[in-house]
Length: 116
Image (cartoon, rainbow, N blue to C red):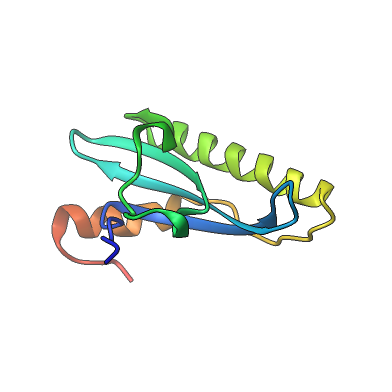
């Protein structure tokens, strides 16, 4: 049974492309809040083939204290992957990560309620 480990994820984007052999691959990029007030950006290819959803150390492309830095890295990573998909002839429409979508779960995290 797969273990789900996405509780700290505040936002996530999933892209679908093809690998070098032509097989479908899934790319997941996310922003999470880790203990110690650390923002982290992760990227994983084909997580469905893993035994656990628990991220590996090398899945993280950023860890730091500034939300704006995390957004910049996450959106840059997203743009890079979308560019590769476009070069492969895929027309993947995906919304960028926005500050507002992270502030809502952050407020819930701190105050136990959502501002929705």
